[in-house]
Length: 109
Length: 122
Picture 1 (cartoon, rainbow over the protein chains, first blue to last red):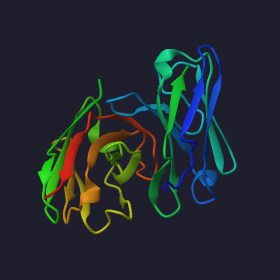
Picture 2 (tube, rainbow over the protein chains, first blue to last red):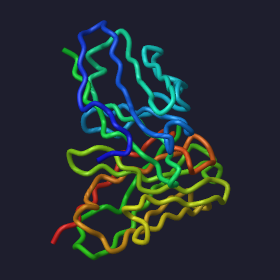
Picture 3 (cartoon, chains in turn green, orange):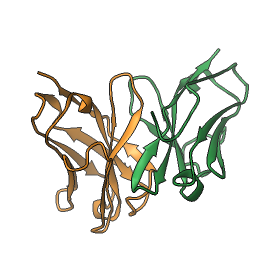
């Protein structure tokens, strides 16, 4: 049982816009920033979004993040086949622990 | 180019010990937080431990507190994870990751190493 809650799966067709939600609480997301990671099969996770809505250099602007209260979202616009991967949200918790969501498997139909 | 490379994984019996290493290059090692994140086979990511940069603090997941110890040797640009009293549920790929800032109480990690597999089994 993960501290942050994500839907286990999401899907979309090429060109579509997809959003993935991440629900937390007042002890984590509400007062700490959220990061998002993409994990392609058999590879290490890659940072997509940090500090709620900032993109590292090299990450396409098709990826965007937002946060409101105790929840956060990752949006992917112009969906491409290479976006098929697992996506994880992460935040810091007041119990002095890092916390991850359970992950969302994105399928491009 | 920032690079991280883990080593030290392998098969260990329940109750045994193992020390993981993470050799880093391409950045001012002492100035950044570093962390360990693990992934059990077929499961999601689990934060394990972080060490702040600039001689800062250490943090541990409740599941490993008292059994695992994180340390860093800034002269060798190497991060370590000493794992004692290992259990079957510690079986996972262990990733080393560089923090975006010196603060260890933050989960922005970039980049990550390729990981090293730890298997706890008799």
